[in-house]
Amino acid sequence: MQTGHEFPKRETTMDITGMVSLKHWGERPSQAKPCANMNRQVDCGWGNLIFSQTFNKDTQLTEVLRDETHGQRNIALYVRNPQVLVAQYPQELFLDPSLTYRLDLSASIRPDIPKGLIIEPAAVADEYAINRIYKSRHMIPVREGYLSSLDANDSVIMLVARETGNGDIVGVITGVDHQQAFNDPDNGSSLWALATDSQTSWSGLGKALIQALAAHFKSQGRSFMDLSVMHDNHQAIALYEHLGFKAIPVYCIKNRNAVNEKLYTGQQPPQTLNIYARIIIEEACRRGIAVDIQDAEQGFFSLSLGGRTIHCRESLTDLTSAVAMSLCSDKAVTHRVLNKIGLSVPKQITPENSGDLLDFLHQHQRLVIKPANGEQGDHVFVDLSDEGSVLDAWKQVCSTGDTAIAEQFVEGQDLRIVVINYQVVAASVRIPARITGNGQNDIQTLIEKQSHRRSRATGGESYIPLDSETLRCIADAGFSLGDTLPCGQTLTVRKTANLHTGGTMTDVTQKLHPQLVDAAEKAAKALNIPVVGLDMMVDAPDKPVYHIIEANERPGLANHEPQPTAERLVDLLFPQTQPS
Image (cartoon, rainbow, N blue to C red; front, side):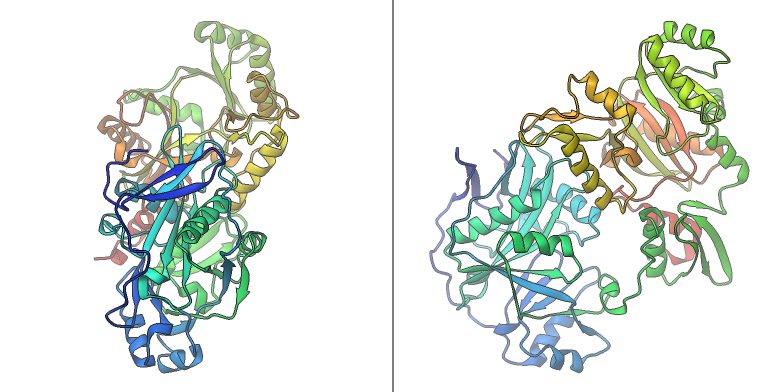
């Protein structure tokens, strides 16, 4: 793949067996040159990896470890006497609760790369996409311009997993060549910052990236590859052990900072707290705002600072009036308010009988049937075109006791725009739940696996229901649950793109057309609501055509990485805590 970049001066090819090879564009010495001095550390973009075994004095090691800038994370690995280092600065340093694993590179390594993906060195232009993945996993992003600073002789290599069709990056891994870094007598290497896109439908990504990096280091003649993993990351540990990694007695020291706080205080929000409440609470805690959780399961909490308390349910706060909430909760009322001020909305009726409904169907050909007060995609039926389906969907919605709405179906991309303090903060294209075939599993198994991944990535908030709507979408595509989906083929299994029914989100904030920004901010002002999520159907995020479908008075602020949604909410609630 032509990338048009200078880093690293290698290209990646994959032969017919699926093996990855890194071909160098320039000559590289077979042996690293001896270091001019010891005390070695490597800049990894998110902080420095400090090789403790190259330091003769503990005082020098602690000095380098503590020399950490804001937002950075320095790591001292291979520490000989961790208790001695921590004792020197017990208020600043701590023993990281991680385990170290090692992979012997003497055995044959064949990367198992899913069809439709390639693994190659990261390009300078990939930095934004890489950082989006890191932020979605609550990891520290690499600093701006880091990739452009690397070259072929650097000890750091960053690999990405890229979809061959659209070029999207869905995974990233960083490796450090110890021989290149400090002429390592043990001839080692290490793996760092492995992350896969929380929104992807690809399976086996982490495994493929690990194997590709191991294959690279083996081709360079390295003897082993080490990694550090949190002691309670049982899923990752199981994967590493499956790949042949063995635990070794190696220790790691880190600084006490905001990034590492949970590792040395042990204080974390209750596990029953969902990700939408958790992201706000964690941001408030970082700013010294007191948090009182009233009901973790339902996301009720209060934030207090300087004698002022604001009650919240996730992103819904005291600042949203009951009237504004009512305007948003009834989709028919929302439609009328926005239509009145000239914003584009689809045609809509509240049918009183089946005759009204079928007349509306004949007029618009394709409909959406949904409850007036529903949320999270429940009982929403999209793109219905025959009388039987429309009447059946209408009856199902009415059976819930809610008012059923019939709406003109609008083609396009499903766009969620988050407006906070009447300004657009984030925009994401929402993609309906989909699976990618591997040529082995049937469709039901693929759905269950993807549903498990979505649930894990969203703290249990997202999963794909195996209901009548899912079965209808599969049948419309010419499949059944027992069919095996061909390798590399993608199948959309839901029409709605709601996150709670397995949908995914891709950030498009920087691409947003000015008219879409203007429409979203006008809608928020018309509804008089300071925090709102607006759902639109658009031709494309960078084009002006839109239809506002509905407004959500309690938008989920998670999954909009890298946009600072929680930060902007806390700015609104407690402006005096804004970072300078």
